[in-house]
Structures are given as C-alpha cells and as structure tokens.
Image 1 (cartoon, helix red, strand yellow):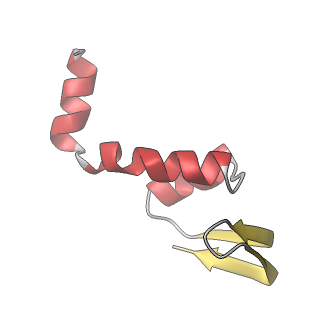
Image 2 (cartoon, helix red, strand yellow; image 1 turned 90 degrees about the vertical axis):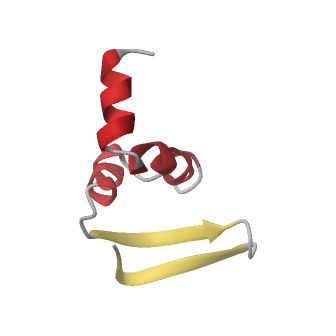
Length: 69
C-alpha cells in the first residue's frame, strides 16, 4: 500500500466509506464531479430536475431545486 493511501486511511477513515455513495451518485443519479465534491466536503448542493429511485421504481421531480446536505 502506498504511503499516501496509508495516510488517507489513517486520518480520513470516512473516505473509504464514501466510495459506494460516490459511485451511486455518479453512475446512478448522474451527479457531476462538482456536486459530488461538494457533498464529500459536507456542503449543500442544490439540484433541479428528475431523480429516479430504483428501490421505489419511481421518478421524483424537484420543481424549485431540492437541497441536499
């Protein structure tokens, strides 16, 4: 394991746990890299459009821009 990876895992243990969420946001919800970066820094992200839930098999429209935190 590289020294960089060891440092990240040691001082930022939550990063490894974010990877599945990042993949879901990118691949399933088509979030941009900028939106994902903001969420990973625990900043608010405003979205507008339609989201699809495979769990509920429904689309959800955000009329005025939903706020994710």
